[in-house]
Image (cartoon, rainbow, N blue to C red; front, top):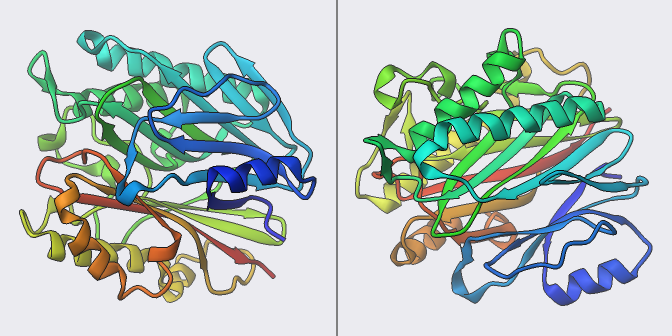
Length: 334
């Protein structure tokens, strides 16, 4: 039985789920511009990204464990004995974006520690104008600097604790951050085809992006593999400028490298045996809807990936990148 059950549901399916007593709702992420009523009885929030093909699916996290809901300042959360899921939505001053991100992240780190969950497993970040320039510096690079400094100040050898992550651009609205944290660390994994993001050269900003390519986390007899937002990057360089089909193929190669069980076994990180990974959910961020048909054609080659994927219109951290893909896989551990 999965400790965290993650999947996509329609609005009607979510309402039926909330009326049932089979599992408890950890959180529901609505990818739309709708305003949700705040409630401490469950944890629901909206991310201002438009779904493609008229989709109206909701990302639902559930568990059989007993849940405590709460809110601390601008952070809403739900937690069990084993993990914490929290979200933040806030307006920011883009003229002072780096400092505001550092403050937001420092607040998140302090909050998670106070709750007893100091190990971050997975983090998502969405904010408008990711490729815009404020005071001559690209907004994404300012975000990277603020996040980097918050982790560096709060953790000794901070690069070793960086979790899987995503940062993509919305068209408007607040900054949205949501995350999963645990009482004990996950295993943060490198991609053999890519340079660690936190080792990027200076051309990508004064502070390199602070995330791991993937994080593996065991929960008793089951586990999750959280793969970060992944794009057509080999080493540290973007590949296939302007060619969406080849970017999808390169991105798939990067993801398959992280799913290669033989590679994972060579890391000697896992104390137990694990079975084949099963995809739970995948998000595909697409810069322009005109690329959707090309992307979907490539997805048809990947067995069950398409049916478990949410396609969202979003700006990618580098202007030349046309898409980014992330996913959550699960496995049983013996």
